[in-house]
Structure formats: C-alpha cells, structure tokens
Length: 283
Image (cartoon, rainbow, N blue to C red; front, side, top):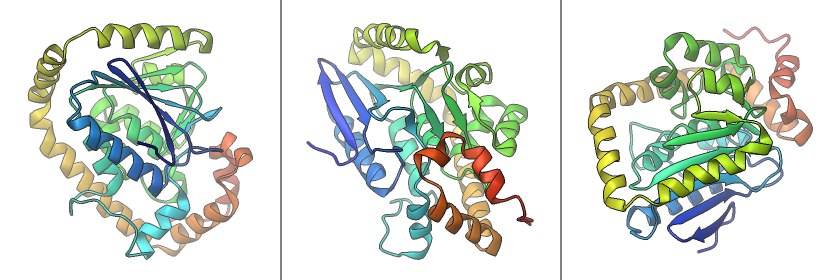
C-alpha cells in the first residue's frame, strides 16, 4: 500500500515507517490519516513484531502540527475528526499507536516539536541524536499542547519538568530530553543508527507471544492511569476551545500560517514566535 506522506519498508518481521512530507514533515491531516491507516493494518498483522518510525526528511522528524489544518479543524466541518467524541484526532492517533501489539520505536534525528512530540510519546520507545531539538511551543502562542502532549508529559516527566517544558516553550536538546525522561536515550549522531538498529534487532528476535505478555503487564500496571489520562485529554480540549475563542490566539495562528512553516523560520521556531508575539498581550 502506498501513502502520500509515508514510506514503508518491510524488513523481515520489522516494519520501517519513514515520515516523508518534505520540506518540514508537518503533521497535517493527510499524515494523520496515513498513520491511522498503517496502525489499522498493524492491528491484525501477525508478521510484524517491531515498528520503527523515522524521517526521510533531513533536519526534521516532525516540525509540528500544520497550522492551516489546525485552523481548518475548527472552521471546516468537513475536516476529519476523531471517531471518539471526548478526544481529539491527535490524542486518538497517539492512543491508537500506543495500543498496537507490536513494539513501536521512534528514531529521531532533527527537529521534533508540537504534534511530533505528542505522537512520539505514544510510541513505546524513543531514541534521538543528542543535538535533536524537542519543543512544545503552544504556550508561547497563548494556548496549550492539546494533542495529548500536556497530559503525557505530566504523567511521564512529573509536574515540575513537564511544566518547565510546556510553559517555557523553548527547544530542549536530545541530551536534555533524555535527562528529563522524554526519551529513552540520546546519542551522538554518528552513534544513533547503530545503537537503534542493535536495539531493534534484539526486539525483533522476541516472539509475538513474549512481546504480547510484556505489553500486557505494562497495560495492567498503567490501567489505573487510564482515567487520569482521559481526564487530562478532556482538560486539554477544554483549554484549547477556550483559547481558540480569544482574538489574540486566532490572530497568532493566522500569522503563523502566513509567515511560519518555512525551513528558515522552523530552524529556530521559539525565536520566530518571540518576534511574532513581542507586542501581543495574551490574556
């Protein structure tokens, strides 16, 4: 099966999924639909034990969610929505991947911000180059990471570190992301491929039964967190709806759609947002 924003390469019992939406790997509606489609196939595919998600676009894993598609999701009733009324489509995507029977691994070498972080946090493991850049920039624009990012960070990193990441809206290096518990391991770029490949090959040697019983234990341990996670998702959606009713936030998003989302602006997105919002008194 061919996908508009993904390149799939079966490799024995490993499926390699490369994000391929140049020049920025923006997570737009098409990438979301493609990732849902891949997940649907994996749910019933007994031949795959490990799924590796990486990028075919130099310098970018996922820049962030496409601002134009975000605006359309609010204004256009024909924009695809989540099948579940209580969670939005990006929350649903990460939760769907979290529930796959395979071991899912992100290999990140470059910029991973916003929706990219939120999707990656739904995968089982995350490995990155030390100088990759992670960021949830939403607070600097007057709203919040509402694709599961706020909830998953608070649950995974603890409130102190999560609130620092969310409210400073700065870039965190791969090395910092490892210390904060956002990723499994950060390595020099020259070592990332070999380390990730060794890990993936070890995982692929495990039977589906062994993978299944380990993931079942993980699900059992964290079952009591499900209510908290979905309560967090609901609070994210409430906060997003409230923010999107404010003229300053709408103006910011329209400005970003018009001026950002270029390779130049995305290299240092926090600095770009600082310039755009220098005189905007967000309420």
